[in-house]
Image 1 (cartoon, rainbow, N blue to C red):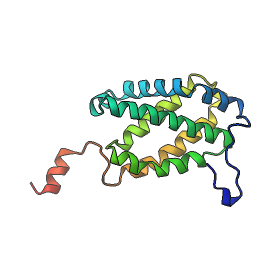
Image 2 (image 1 turned 45 degrees about the vertical axis):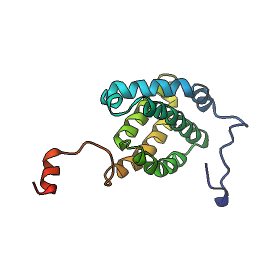
Image 3 (image 1 turned 120 degrees about the horizontal axis):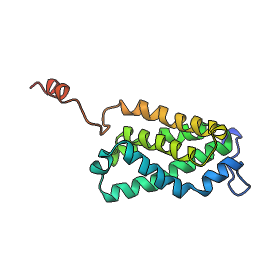
Image 4 (image 1 turned 30 degrees about the horizontal axis):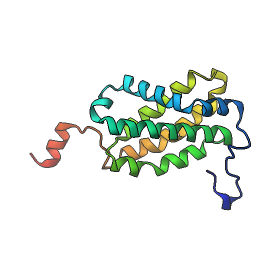
Length: 160
């Protein structure tokens, strides 16, 4: 959502979305399921690292991520998506979800949306997804990310 004190209007979904954003919004739950399937196909260890409850939460979160892409498409600016992506890493750190999994999920969302939109209408989607991936790549380098560590480096740091 844009900041009202800056004089920017919020995205109004009741007034109507651009046609491409409306198609994505209408199919957001189906797209979320397909994006999670694509993410699991890209990284089969996703299912091993997360139990069924965590996978359900990821599915619910995927719907929210698709909504943020729709908002960015409707506003014509990827800044809404970038702002949202800046705010979510602490929540996923508490749930021990690596930023790499979120990046995989966002790339899967792009692929799933690419199946329903023609290539000529994918530019706003690509911009929104890249705007979300950029801060997540930055946050993945901060300590506390639940990614797999290099065993040799871990042994050196331990002093073994």
